[in-house]
Length: 402
Image 1: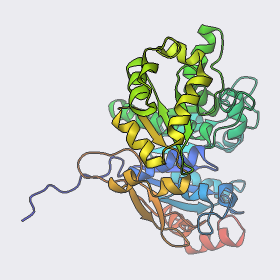
Image 2: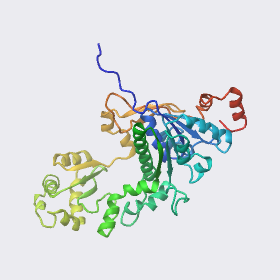
Image 3: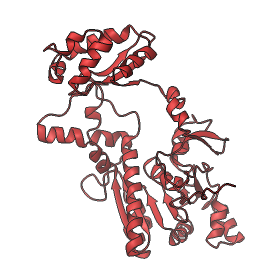
Image 4: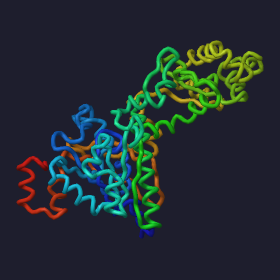
């Protein structure tokens, strides 16, 4: 007979989140809450919903951003410009634990859905305002999209090659803001547990990404110069780069100290004398002679296929990685071995999705809920706030709910 204890409940089970959200920053934050067991009610526009639904059709006909950021939520479609639609949101919020919004600057305040207003009316509520640049200052009303904030935060200036700065290949500003909103909600809920009061939480994309810029920012502020853009290389370590292999792959390696260099020189490059050669023996020397250092490593790895190159490097105790594309990531043996893949329901059928990276003790697995269709839960939620059949029919007839 199985004597193992039953799985622990999800840590946020029993909490309700109302989100007037769009794009990535707020939806990714609230998806973390949904994965941990919270009920997340997503309020969408009636004319197409969250505009991320229309970004592409790459996920079996659905938008890849939307599938990524919106599993496990209930969708209600409302016109918030109509007082009746706004009243529904207020009713839902009255019974909620958390409210999150990332509308254009000033829009939530005009609707009375900003964090300060809501928390004044509901002292136990944790309410989050996510914006591009914050509620005050000369940039408060400036339009903010991920790429623009990456530029303003200096990320683009340190990413790319010496000749060409580039933006990050993921929405780094959106993700940074989302994760600070997520952690801010958790912190505010802990505080509410001890004080009984929630309160407003403010997160801006610029401030979140500026925090992530800590290393290059401190390097520039206190050292006088910004780290150079070096592509896949490292500005102050050599060898540290991606090198081509004989079968068309690329292997990235990182030598962190001079002991590792001696092992690399002897066991991989096949020239142990380089370990004590003054031109290469120290990291400072290798950085000063980066071209020659890289040429030596490239010649050695270029004669090997990828698997053999990785085996040689691993055998020598050198940190290394295979430069993978996204299809290779989807089949990564480590993710498979750790059983990180699940399927989530969507309007077009089940799709693969990764478990979130937070693994909790006690057997509680993340709740990988379905990705909702636009307005899929409108009627049920309208009934939940006490609306009659006649009232619901009138909202649908007048285009206030869908």
